[in-house]
Length: 345
Image 1 (cartoon, rainbow, N blue to C red):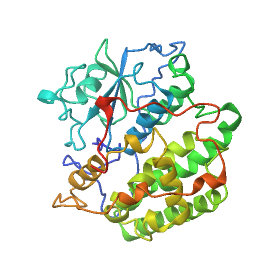
Image 2: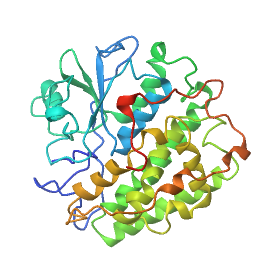
Image 3: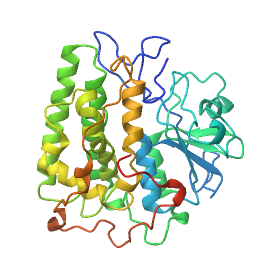
């Protein structure tokens, strides 16, 4: 079976995350259907037709939440937020009245998957986009999903929306994204779900070697590629913002805390303070998910009271490096009242 949160291969019907003696391998077989301006896969971009299903706990879903807000797609692509925990079957809508999504009318995300693929056997993952008109899942392929929000949904972007995937920088963005995924985004999971000392230490070394290289890159430039925020920054941020809260302790990524890596800590705080980033982060959901769901790593399900997260609001000083967060565009407006998150809640 597969892990509903990560698409990771598991060992049994109990949904264990760690394969004893082995290394973590992510199942990357996603539903590759695309929602495009020309509708070539049968799903044209139409405002209000689709529902973006996320959990604020999940780093892959958080990418879509951030990009949606930066581009101003809140009205065109409404969002459903699943609860931070799930069982071996599916993410659930336990945050909604009666535990049911008010638009899709379902209690479990798996219902939308089964509506299109009866008996679907791979991971019931977030983010997922569901066709409201049919109740069927369209895609859960998170990597192209945010690219499509940038390139295919342009007719519905807000005035002043930034270019997150500019044509002139795409090759460099893709190159950075590939190594960040391999060593950092997925690397923390390879540490946390390692089933042997050898697998853990190999992943640990790759992770911190890449973080050191990123620190060196970002020491003299405000953003990863070019002088504005791009898709590359979004993808790195969603891992960094979870680092001290869960990855450092829960996943044994403990050479240093993020707060002890000066360049990356300042970079992450810069993004956190940027509208569209920190105002989408729910630390309470993040901690609840990792510590309560991964019971083969944390058998008691006890969620740590710490760490102190108030440092995220301290001055970062990155303005001295120049750069223009939104390029020729503007910041997004205030968060919609029904999408606000608590401060460090």
